Length: 116
Length: 112
Image 1 (cartoon, rainbow over the protein chains, first blue to last red):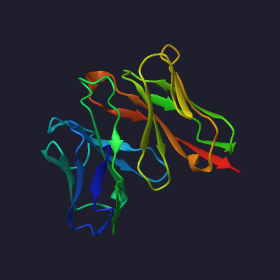
Image 2: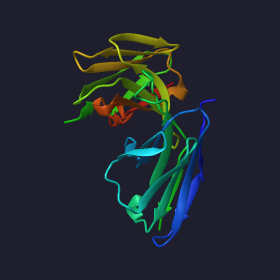
Image 3: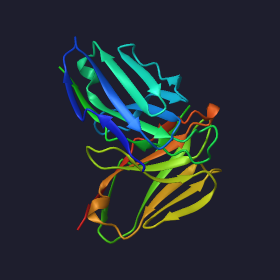
Image 4: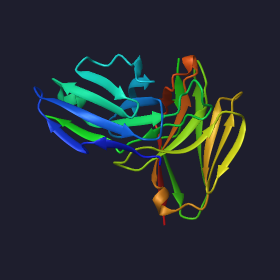
């Protein structure tokens, strides 16, 4: 099973709302990632979790708050977003890049977020 | 600095062979990945090279030369469904964090 699931598929929120994106994998992967992707651009890394601890924050604004409750789940909490935050938000997971030579990332289908 | 270059667009004919090139200059290197992304969908892993040489997987092959900072993805017997964006990504070698540095992607259009 190489599936990463994400909910919701689509989300429309106002600039004062609080919402959360959810990601789940059952491949036993110990690294999980959040990306943001704008149209016709490559994915842009936001956060990396390794063994449920935040290992990389790519200077992401604090209105995005990641959380890793356990090894299978990854959340992204959203608060007071701006219209320019509208994008496809992708979650990915991989084997531990410190230990495994082959650590390809498997992506979920993404959440299409629109901020109004 | 980190720089990954690949052509923006390519067009090829159904049944033909196409080669998508990728050159990179990065401060570290921990493998080179190729992903396929159809419009509106998530990227799908295609191949991974960490040593020089050719990796073959069905209709797709990927080549790496670390000394030249060069890779290519070869697609044979092109099908219409191969129309997609192809992303070259280099694993960031500093700290083995799993961080990938993506190129801008090559949009491939396969014509009948």
